Length: 434
Ligand SMILES: [Zn+2]
Image 1 (cartoon, helix red, strand yellow):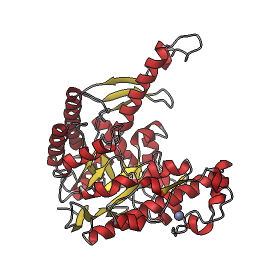
Image 2 (image 1 turned 90 degrees about the vertical axis):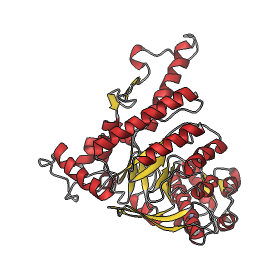
Image 3 (image 1 turned 180 degrees about the vertical axis):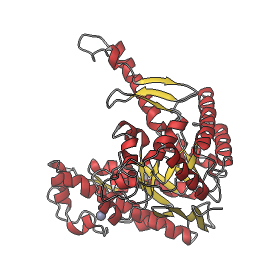
Image 4 (image 1 turned 135 degrees about the horizontal axis):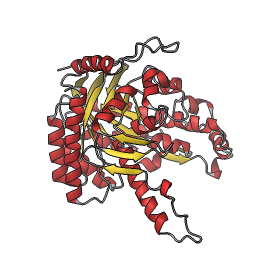
């Protein structure tokens, strides 16, 4: 098929598998965790820390990069790898999730404000401040940027173009993220729309049947659409990025089993280099989330990678790996870190071997007063830079004083623990224990 993905071992115990995703910016050993660097930065970490932690691949959000600094600037700088210094495999989303969740949030906010009493309650919105969502149609979505009020349009074609300019190695097809609680009728319509949008994404990038050919086409297209001959890239970046980009189709279907299965069949049938499951972790229970993944597990391709969008809580991961998923992006480890919640690596190995992760037992809230006098290492079983050099008291102090270093150290440690978790998971799969 192609060099993009190779299965190295299929577990004898489940659908879990070991694999290798090859990109122009390096190899990802799967299953792998994908930390989220929304705006082209994993918050609080320098790219060298990210490397030191052992992060193999990171995720950036197209919507945020479109609103600021703008994808043309990223392209001029030679692509997101060079612009951000994250010289590693990168994934970008389609913008769909943010566009839809933001639009809906704005709608709700407007409703609350506009019905409130002018006396004492939230102030009414002026005409100019009305909801930023302009229109959802078959063509795509129009809305106003919350950053500068500019009118932005996301269509399948535009999402592909934005992602081309960003230059991440793996791209997602434009999809509609169905809100939790949607009716069957709405979920069906939205899922079918997502399928039609997938067709448009595929015709925009060329049918990437083999990643290699697609990449070549993509490169040619790049030169065609956007000649950069007049542009002089800044030192020390002699060449604009020209890495191969791989498209993943996105499975939707909401909380309805038949829609999820139909969507999986449809999306997998399109033969994109990879597939992703979207629209999960949008407010449903953990059980519902796992059901949505379980329903489509049998449809996932055996020879192409599968990504789960927006899920990666510790206690879910082993179960989800068993369904044959290869990569997971999630903001949780980094977001929790910035709130002072640290994962505990202690007993992680035991927990992995018992195949049961209890995420609550693996966290401490370093902002609690009990840590003020605690001069023990942050986690005595952890070998990360933070745990080798700093005490709980010091981290507590940094958080209480809102010192920037606190966020850096906590993020470093949490991502380190995630990497150790995935090291453990890969070893378990190798031995057919998962
Ligand atoms: Zn540590």
